Image (cartoon, rainbow, N blue to C red; front, top):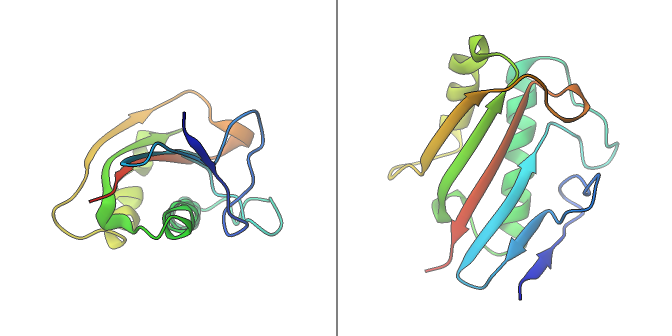
Length: 126
């Protein structure tokens, strides 16, 4: 069994899923899109601002668990256009320090609510 994680500091789930699933030593953070947790609206249509909000949402979930980006071992980035990769990568990198987590970055045809970027993460304790 796992414990569902929920914080008001990140957008509430917009479907039948948890913000994160805490299995004790491993945490799966659901894909985050650039929703402001207070308004549940996109922060902007700008890819840099969207990526920044996504990373803030992930950080809020980690902090709810008394964790940080240093606990993240894997992240998956989904982009609606690989043309945005350099900008997304710069914002993404600004939240991390070495050793960096493993990562995948892929272009997809569509993201929830028309987002330009979605990022999911796996973190560990210890």
